[in-house]
Image (cartoon, rainbow, N blue to C red; front, side, top):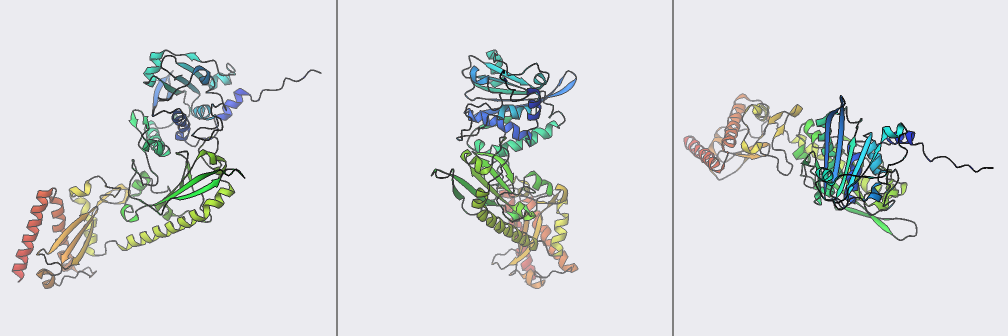
Length: 506
């Protein structure tokens, strides 16, 4: 009896279509696989270009990514587009592991992917994989690599060595709005690769540098800054295998957002800065974020107050099984053992931070304007020229002006206070960010003669007029005082006016 020759492991025409739906959450998570490969090849520069062009009377989105890594020789590039092939399969000392990233990520958004690569700038080899060719059974395997003219490669790569990956027939990008796609991708890559960018590596998108984004708001980038670390970093040595004696470390850190400084941002700004609806834990594997979600919080449910703190969990690739890292490197499914290790501390700290945010909001609420004059001034301040200091760029993430609904600039906050001073002035303004505090001198004759009701919260007509008079004078002083010289002049006028007023009332 003749022995069966067996069947092919896969049916290529059906397999390649099924792999297109392997589940990349976003365009950024797919492109991240290619950038991982670039950094794996010791690249220091990665350039990404997305264009839309008319091709045969239809729109064709194209994406190209090139790097200055060590490149691939002919033997390597012949395997680069094979599903499951990797020169470093299952190694745990860097980004890659499974050998699925390049073909899988590319075909998730494009019907054709082409790879050019050179190790020395003298010979360039190329290979491609085309979905339509496989479906139509024109190709059942990756064709042998072909040579590309060196000048053509250098025009695309602008380096003597490196790799160029090109996606064409991007049928899953054509319906996307180009401007919003690029804007969202820039933000996503800045967050995913923040550690590499902080380390000095560069990623450009359509010629513009991608800046790092810190979801914890602790480090520099396009994000706001102004949070504080909450407690020291926590470290957990985790055993890699039973009886192996080898461990790897999980690092956890928390940050607390400044409610007092950022609560007055509009909803649009909170969304744009990544404050609102972005609570949760950033999971970083081998220096690259792979997931974000509500992990290791035990029985604690997510609440609105949890928008006001952040957490990051970092680990190396040798803990992939413990974290349940998927082959697309874009989500985790932690084991019960890991959950038991991390949850007790993380849930407790999460509850503490929630309570602190709740308390901070209660304090902010109690600090709102209570005087009728303060409320009137705040309501109408947006009609007045803003002080120079109040329209400067935010410093350390502190918004410079109070915000109204729908992103409207609502002007300054006003507070009237009183204090005893031996100086001659009757009132003294202080502009701090979005708040103008006006202190009235209790020792000045006008304070005593007018029975100034500093602690009275009434809608008394004469008192309101007096308070608005002083608030207006203070507002004029901080508006006119645009530089050191003008500030000294307005201060001198106020002190002189106060002296003359005291003389008239003596």
